[in-house]
Figure (tube, rainbow, N blue to C red):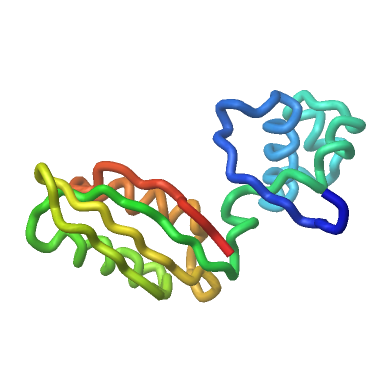
Length: 148
């Protein structure tokens, strides 16, 4: 569409081409300092320089695309006392700022909860926030439903 400069999608890694995945790996090696040059990084992951330059400006890890933004997640939680509190405590522990919480009435032993989190002040990446939430035993499912 004419006039739009930054259209983004959240896409599962499982459906991306090898060149795009390797471009992300190269960028990660460079950011972490595990490779000093682009040449070194592309050689380590087995990607051509031309493919890296073709995709480099369009490939970003989730945490980079959502840093200093608002991420809205949907969770399915077991209907047990203290589960939502445990989720909120974890978000607070990584300095995520909870902006909204919407919880449906529990049905068949689970409750659907959506939480909007400001990520600007977080000590960790939003990606690691999601991983940590997924490690809470009573969290059955997590899905990113939006970001600004």
